[in-house]
Image (cartoon, rainbow, N blue to C red; front, side, top):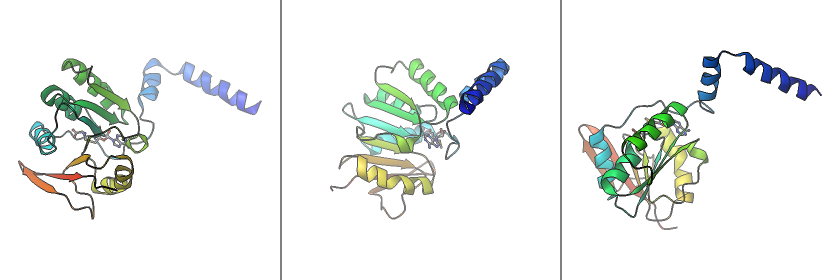
Length: 183
Ligand SMILES: C[S@@+](CC[C@H](N)C(=O)[O-])C[C@H]1O[C@@H](n2cnc3c(N)ncnc32)[C@H](O)[C@@H]1O
């Protein structure tokens, strides 16, 4: 009874909110993003896709995809399929607009959610621009879910003790490259 009353009050409160407030409530990320949005410059996007040798047989997952520029470029220029995951609804909107604007809707999927809770097993390439601590936190999930040979590329940040196979400097920015080892 108490729960039902509470639900009714909550419904009424939302129903009496002004339209903008309701929209803002719907727009809020399910939880605070672990890192703020800063886009990767296009030259670095290109270098990340090239170092991973992305081609038409690849499925490129960008974890924390922002405006979707990495999966969009992977599809448009390299013929790959792409998946972009972001927790922020504003970024999801921008990424979907980007997908539509570039006509890659048949090859790129944008998912709203927490990157730590997604199934990554279909990826052949994973791209990251997060934080050093998040890369380290993510590493066990990458090792568990990704197939051996899957390529991992990170803009700016390495992955603790996991030594990269390649390290590039693109206009003063670092790009790190690894492949998932055999189990
Ligand atoms: C530094 S930006 C990188 C954007 C894009 N990957 C790029 O390189 O241009 C990091 C992105 O991660 C998203 N993000 C942060 N925490 C997240 C989480 N737990 N799950 C999914 N996305 C997250 C942010 O909303 C932001 O768009």
